[in-house]
Length: 120
Length: 111
Image 1: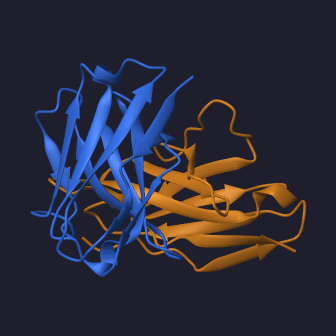
Image 2: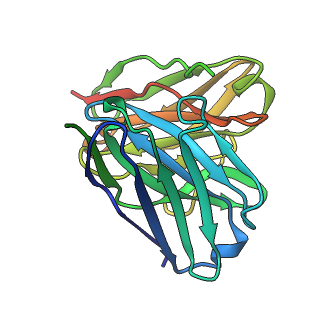
């Protein structure tokens, strides 16, 4: 069974930094692209970032480019998202998601999310 | 990258069909056959219900179907059931360095 478990969320001051982790199990982690998506309170889903299966290619939404960094450690089956220069509008639940397959496009499995609150 | 456009809400009675539209551009919906749809119940993580425009993951009822015409994709829920009441989001591959873009979401209400 595919499992994705996010951690690392919490309360952080504006301008601060945080590192989110997503621990994966139940599939061959190194074979799949992985993604981060967030959802602000009461709002819709927002795509943030993707990394390919070997970690060599990263992609970002304009809203987080230059502030967030995605990475992965295939030896630890873990996906990361480094958040920096945080602002109030970064307050959201952050989800990690697994690509459905190498030749198909869709977020096939999701974690339960981790809440990041940016406030002084 | 602009978000895809979805209606804020749609509603239907049990047993009826409802269709949710998702309008983008040639840069996303119209340019690729990579539209996906997600169902999200309150307080829960989203769930993939359609990928690659019209494919259903294992375990998703065939009441859910997807299609695309030009720059607009659609999700149809046939035989509406109470448990279908949820928020639905479309998402498209957008190429380049952006990769994906979501719609604003549609709330489906079962009357």
